[in-house]
Amino acid sequence: MKKITVKLVVWRQNGPDEKGFFKTYFAENIDTDASFLEMLDVVNEGLVKNGSEPIAFAHDCREGICGTCGAVVNGEAHGPREKLTLCQLHMRSFSNGDTIVLEPFRARALPIVKDLVVDRSALDRIVQAGGYISVRTGSAPDANAIPVPKKDADQAFDAAQCIGCAACVAACPNASAMLMMSAKVSHLSSLPQGQPESKQRVLDMVSQMVKEGFGGCSNEYQCEVACPKGISVKYIAQLNRQYLLSAIKSE
Amino acid sequence: MKKFILSLVGIKQLVALSGLAMVGFLIAHLLGNFLIFSGPIAINNYAYKLHSLGPVLWVARIGLLAMFLLHFSLVIYLVIVNKRARNGSYAVPIHKKTRSIFTQTMRYSGLLIFIYIIVHLLDFTFTPHTVDNSVIDGVYYGLYGHVYNYFLNPIRSIFYIVTMFAIGFHLVHGVQSVLQTFGFYHKLYTPIIVKSSWIIAVIVALGFSSIPVYVCLHNYLGWEIYVAT
Ligand code: HEM
Ligand code: FES
Image 1: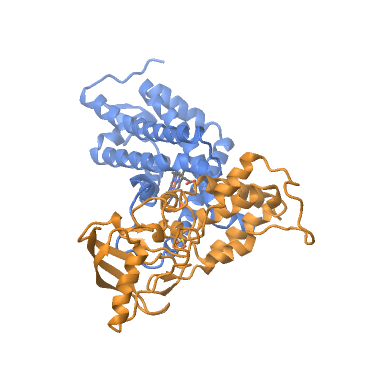
Image 2 (image 1 turned 30 degrees about the vertical axis):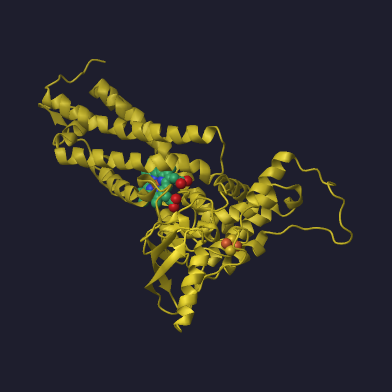
């Protein structure tokens, strides 16, 4: 079993309106098979024992499916490995003596709650603005009553992989939520069930994104490489196309 | 409709539309400029024909000016909104994985183009070809002479070439970006279009730059001015 010691430079901020600062910690004798968050747990146990405030970080599933975790590790959202969430990152990706700078995702629309925890409800409000479909109430509809071409189903499924972690926002030079939003738009608009709202959906979601204070897309594609689920920027193209058609046809 | 066109995605589409219109103009302008290689009669005739279009020319000019102002003002808006969206800066800057020098410098290459366009309008559009600026070896050559004398000044030539490369920089990202902005994405065609973006950028940068180089060579090597029709 290999053990390493790393130096952590962590963003500490007591509350949304407090001034943040960097503080240095040492994570000593960490098993390289430990996950990154487990390493933080170890550091936090030490802090609690000393009577200090532990480092606040968000997490839930710890298996890359919920989208709760996330921080910028040495300038990379979710750390140095591609298509991984922070909770799926392991200490074997680091070497003994490494310095790891840990910062929260930075965007005006995602205010810092504490330390590495950001408030992602702006993304929820974007989804609320248009990420829904109308269904009839009553008994459950028959399975496969609505035929969906395989290609469309695959595309919807691919886009639906977005876990809303906001790594795209963190990595975007404009702190734009276009990749996340486009995944939601494509997910629903690729399916027949999503058609009735498809025109209004994209207009409403974009309006909400602007209201929340996210930036726009400059087609730099930093989001695509940061995305732990590998969502493609082709969905942004699809969003742009739908937006153009819907905006022209709207009153 | 207005509300949606004037929202981030719609604005970006207007930026792309105006950018594309200017690219179209630029290519036409370049082809016209190439007539300088055929001597003073060819290019002066071309300029004369353009000017005799009268109202059509004015429509084109006003359209172009509108595209320019639209692009410029909307880009300023986008830059402000996009800058404001990031709250504080990262201590370790986000790694540039897909960010190239071309995408990062859009606003700076654009600014240089802006300055250049003003200089260009002042020097050519608003400065008539007179006996003070358009005479070569005692003979008046009109537009041809004006351009020729203009580029004999090395500072102007260098500034000109630098800005032409700035346009090239702008277009490497710009041309291909327009398709994404309007929502065109294709597994096969998109990579081809990205490559043609490069080709257009290189043609524009080298094409325009060839004129001051030609003038300087022409003068330095003492070539004859070609006046046959
Ligand atoms: C007046 C000076 C100019 C400035 C300040 C400027 C600035 C910019 C900026 C900052 C962008 C990126 C916008 C964004 O994605 O957020 C852009 C895009 C673009 N510009 Fe310019 N530009 C200028 C002139 C021009 C000219 C003369 C042309 C054409 C010959 C041009 C063609 C384009 C194109 C094609 C795009 C891409 C639009 C897209 O991404 O969809 N620009 N410009
Ligand atoms: S904690 Fe659920 S994705 Fe990381």
